[in-house]
Image (cartoon, rainbow, N blue to C red):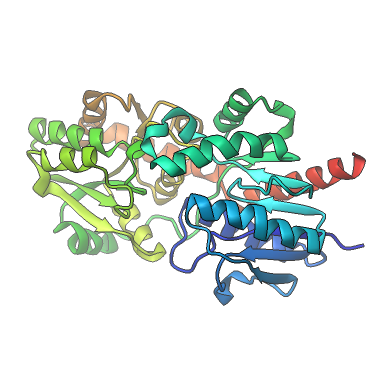
Length: 381
């Protein structure tokens, strides 16, 4: 008898895919097409765009209400998802963002990307923080199995929530294959379009406290004061979490005229901007993975990243690692990148090699193996 798998796909929203949304999109697109014998029910919280119905073996199910607030999370998962699972009786409920229905006994695989809210709870709004810290320990205990995106996160989940390591699978993120080096003429055109023709350090991500923009801005000021090279800082991402400390750090910058804000870019624009960067400055103080690191590697762009959580695991020896809590450490790496062309060339070469370790094809295969293990375990039980 064919397997039936229900999937939480509420983060598949056209033109609004972010980290977990891309993980969902890239993995499900491959898994669904690779396994036409399986019936998939995709649970959306609004009418889905046709591009997310990847194949004929998908049945889209729209469940109300749209779940974008902690109170609505509870209604959606504990009422709407619970009822749908009881009606459909799938072999597995896959949740790529880690949220589950505690009231339902369907075998489930929760993908928990990181536990930043356990370590830096004050970085999140009050209600979101309360929801995460109450529900996620319970999701971890309820889950038949857990997948996560790095060995760091695997160990963190085991430690924080008392889950056995053998019940957690590592499924490394991939990276969009469009990311690759571009011709010199295209680099010059992109720099002209976005940075007035200047070289630039690039930050990509949601402008969230844990992305460490406060120290990045201060480090860039130190760099500008000590360097005679005209290199700008480009910031790509929505100001969704633009907090008072981030605003104050920016407004207090001596060289703020050298900072360029691009907002959100589409995939093609992001590729060009990444491939044209002088270097990436990805110095978060907490990450479950860090996809922009690998995107830069694939583009032949050197990387400055943090020496904490998952980032050393992803970067290996192909990046300059810094103390994210030290503006001086970040600034020194920027200066080395700007003055040591030999080191920069070595990092580019190592990055191109390291990028080959990560692909969505590999991720989809690992996630599928985790799905089968979860179903097999539930059958045995």
